[in-house]
Image (cartoon, one colour):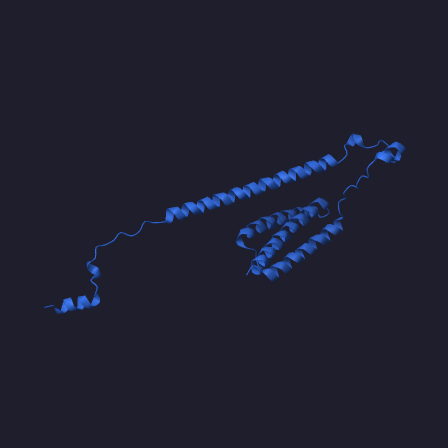
Length: 190
């Protein structure tokens, strides 16, 4: 005969699961997950460093090729009124030389800077902020723009500083364009 306590206990645990032996929990899988994440970060870092080195090498090759294309100071004619192409023999064999690149006027650089700022403001208003992985680059570029602006306050007629400012603003616009392009492709793939 069962007591009242045994009847209640049997009703609470009808399969007598309390009587089973205790089992150890399964092994922790966190070390494998952590190792996989660290390996993924290491590969991503290596790819970013490799891409940066490739960009530096490409820039060096481009700068070197541009330096090779410029005439040396000793190659210029002594008389600025005469050129090598003025001689009849050289006129037949001479290749046309491109006009040297000229620095854009200061007003053009200022206007371009204002246009780029307006474009960036419009993108910020319509698209919002950049993704967090790109936001770091934007903040760095904005800091560099502030430094150029401080230098411009000391010498506002410097075309070199205005050119640097325009180039930095172009870099910021490229960040937004790339972000919008990625967002478009992501939405188009849905």
